Image (cartoon, rainbow, N blue to C red; front, side, top):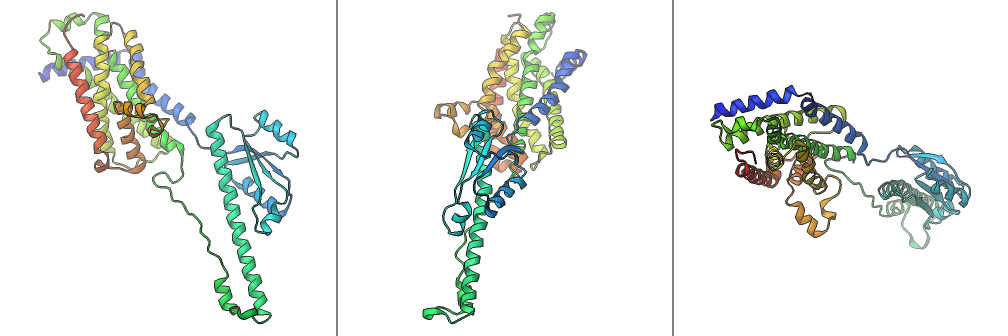
Length: 398
């Protein structure tokens, strides 16, 4: 049995490396897709073009403007002086946001009243608009907290100076007591981000890109395995051999499984070296989970090859699997935001479970104790799909 399987594996490798197109499919597309996705799928906002309309022109407003100028997320490209200029900047998409500091800004701060600052955002791209608005809100919030703390300190020192120049009125506490009781409670939130401290979207998306690349490469290669035998006329030779369907399936899938593991290592190395994506988990565990996932993609591709008549038909039919699997995997759109029936449908998508595994290993350093439900799901799906492919496989021309 194993001798026959070894012969089939050797035959597959010879065919794989003899065809220049197949060699290119193994090496070039994975790296090319990683580079394209890695540099283009990026939701981080840096050097966003904004305009600031300072209608107060006070030391406080200039201080706030300097905060935006010193932030790496913003690039101040205009200083409109009228409503018409603001509208022109937004209408022609010259800026993504306009920060307008309204009159009496400094006076409101000194009086302890709300100081008006308006953020006008171009909402054409809702994601960019919401991110820019959030970043601008953080800058204004930090300025507000510091201004409030400065006001409290000024009042405290003024009160201390008054008591030092004369007796405390109406039985007020002494200078030391007043100084101790003068500051008001100051609650400042200090968020701490786990797993991705810099909140780089690239660290989140590139592990998902790795998953999609492995799925597309292994699925497309395996989908053409049996169809190629029919097209080049070697299926008749396989029919007269003592090879059983199980042996033929193993001989067809093991070479592509090794190719999938090779591509996985290649893409992971490129992600670490080129994009500096952290890999906090165990690499051997990641490769083991990749093997579980490959049983699903290879089995599905082999099943598709048994029902297809030509390689072109197999390639076109593969989109019926890869496109829905990609959309339902949670790569771009969070599954929790999908409608309830769609969330149930995602449970049938093996790509979803491997996506959770890869992101958990890359970003969280998760182990088997955390990832075993996803690993179990991949094992069940892989066994089911591979069994279906074996049952479908018949040594016939039909």
